[in-house]
Amino acid sequence: MPVIKVVLLVVGSFNPPTIMHLRMLEIARDYLDRTGQYKVIGGVMSPVHDKYGKKDLACSLDRCEMLRLALNSSSWIRMSEWESRQDHWTRTRLVLQHHQNQLNAALSCNESPNKRHRSEEHQWVAKVLEHCNKDEKVVVKLLCGGDVIQSFNTPGLWLDEDIECIVADHGLVVITREDVNPAKIIYESDLLYKYQKNIAIVPEWITNEISSTKIRRALRRGESVKYLVADSVIEYIHKNGLYMTNDNKYELFPQNQHGSIFLTPSPSDLP
Image 1 (tube, rainbow, N blue to C red):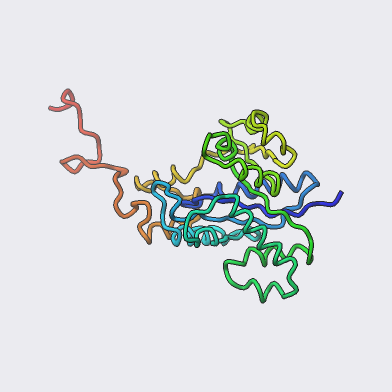
Image 2: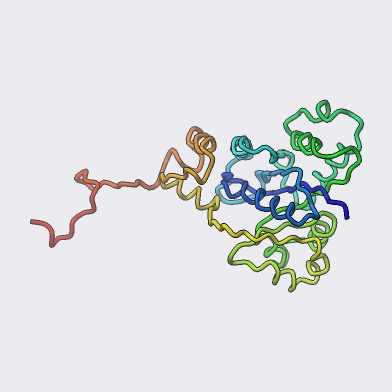
């Protein structure tokens, strides 16, 4: 049975990008490669559009620049700005289809990939083409956390045809989390159960609760996020005053009216 070559696509806010965003791709690549059925030859991270409407969402220019900095250390993961450059928010299914179509067109093209894909937007394509032959089939699969597959069962949040297209035509790779049981979610959904062979459940044995929400909270409070976010990203955040870093609401060592950093003594301690 021939090995299927795969590109992993992650969509998200990356607000800001953390080491766990990158770890998702590393964990998924290791798992799929070990199955012997797949060979991951590329990873793509696609920041959402500004009109996604999420609270505290930094503008796409800043989020893309932070992600670009975070990916400097990766030899196989690239960023795609296509989604963020559209006129409006784009459904995940359409983002996935666009990247698959873009890759298919490149694989069937006779031009040199270096000529056709020099622009930054197409760098991910050029990187993938280094690991496959012309007209070779490469599948773009959606990589996500357990919270995403859990949201599939939320009424009105996803279109059934979108879920079916994502799972049936592309495939889903799910990183587990302690509070979500993907196997149970698949069992309880007729649609997901139908295509369960196209869903890979990847256990995350070295768990970590790092999230962009917690990172933003720490930054607002003037707390260190070193080793949770790339140093270059931290520098960019402070340089541009993102996430209220120029106007912290909290002080690590608040002073009382007498200038002391210690807590105000109780009345019984006063002379």
